[in-house]
Length: 456
Image (cartoon, rainbow, N blue to C red; front, side, top):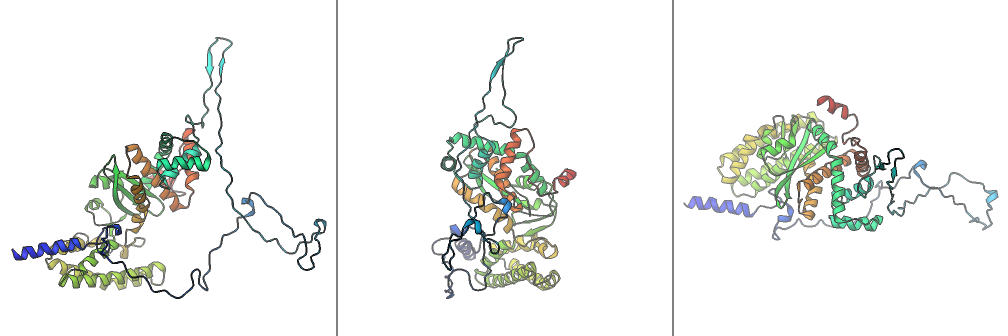
């Protein structure tokens, strides 16, 4: 009985001592008693760029991209103050170029379409003209619909704030219902390219995946992400289950980088477990008393050494062959330490070590053996940050249509940013093509559409 109570107290203390440093809890959940790292001592250097810093300067646009050129000539000699008449100009060297970028006044352009009705002289039937292809049935054009969708979907503005922004920036009076209508117009326009992007991501050799909480109709839901190097896709699902993971991953057979959540066991290819999560687990072990604490401390040191070596091989000073040679004894030592934690029979950490070493042993070192695989899942977690901020300000979505808009806009924004493409130009063209009955432009990288068609 006493031993049971001791273990119970120890388990409760471990739960009470969980922070963002030794668990997956966010930093915002840390209690005030958790001391932040002390501030660094002042270096004594002046603020700003230091001597030898290359600096960052705005490059001049090429002359063909300049809208207007204004020539300036001196009026008087700065030496003798004599006049310099225009008809006696003698230029010395090339002129100094100075460019000023300014926004023009941007009132919206209103086009009125008049649909006339004409009577037939032969039969007397009155025929009314129809709107030509490309003219919206609604009151707003493709670019305005794209801008409103970007304000809410890319810049996380509330619908009412987007309504105010449209009025202040463009002089457009738009209702709250029209904001939603613009969102749905854009969402339908990009639906097919987003599905193509999902299929493309499922064919890549390496993918990162993660999930975070969402709210749909005030009920719990989950936002999933599957990130590759140039295409990043999102999905809002009611479940955090294996079926949800299947819907996200599809027929993906490449190397999957994720945390240890059990649903990812459905993946039949190689896996890489996120070492950022493992580092926090080892930190929690090191804070335990007794033998587990000593084993955890050594695991923390080995993890730091591994990350240091990885940064060297990633940035160039160390070759991959040297990295693999150094990692062999480290891998054996990590496996030995985890076995000792399992044998310690400590209620919480013994099971954790068995999950790491027993169930996921083959997925710990894929990044060492396979080039192009990262040891952490930071790529997926970075992709989710924008969505998490959106969730905090919007408190989720209130309909399935709203959820589709969110996942599609997240996909379009993240994918185009990864490829260095302009989001507004893409959305405008997508909506315009939809009005004309044409397919939307592709979200895939260049030369990828043919590959996707062949795979299909």
